[in-house]
Image (tube, rainbow, N blue to C red):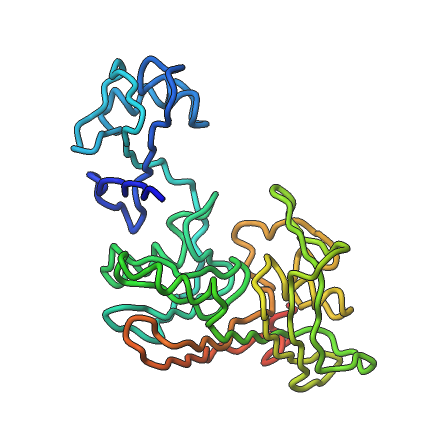
Amino acid sequence: MRRRTPPPPSPLPQRGGIDPVRVRLPAGDEWATVRDHLVARLAAGADVIDGMLDAGRIVDAAGRPVPRDMAYAPGMYVWFHRELPDEELVPFAVDVVYQDEHVVVADKPHFLATTPRGSHVAETALARLRRELGLPTLGAAHRLDRLTAGLVLFTVRPEERGAYQSLFRDRRVAKEYEAVAPYDPALDLPRVVRSRIVKERGVLAAREVEGEPNAVSRVELLEHRDGRARYRLTPRTGQTHQLRVHMSALGVPILGDPLYPVVTGPVPAGDFRRPLQLLARVLEFTDPVTGREHRFVSPRALRAWSSYDEWAG
């Protein structure tokens, strides 16, 4: 099997912890110039692309500005920095709970995305940590939902990232979550929930369908009071919104969830009042590079349990 040649290194530095965009020109002869392909491929529009080209903001592998009339060359790479969206500052810190020369384990707050995506770019855990720790090569080994708080593993060296990502792919990481949700005395716990979950592109909520289960979660009751309960959730698979879907299906949806059981829409920018009461509490694994046994526990408290009136108000 022929190995694909890795792309050349970026000729542009990061900006504020954000990598430049890299575009590889595909095979084909339908474009006469690099400019024609970028206009067809990118949503920015011809005027924006022309302005970037005229300003020398789109460069080749040597860092040379690409002129408007540069001939199209399949396999060529170009780089540029995108215009960042206006983002609401997430007023909560990312706490580093462990750091060595290979990994960083961070405790991500609610409302902060893990990695740049869509309208969340500079206000992400990855971009913040790159800036704060001075580690431009930092990368995420996995992701947490933006609304979920808790532990995330980042890698320091790009050449080692695959080894850590494989831990999650091969289910060699023990993960425990904690949630606050309504208490139902009739709900028989602990139990293992199995179902088939699908998440369609462009649809906010995932849903359960008939078929072979692809999502497995263990749900345990830790304690309860005043009609609320703390639950330990142990996912054995990693489907999108899996724990949120399973808790809703059990009739005890996680407090603060804007999607389950009823979609109320995305949380408006700047609305930090009632965070989803879901926390990635424990991360445990054997380091694939050093062989060390790691177990990390988030010290965060879910506010709907520790101070419900403050959270609800």
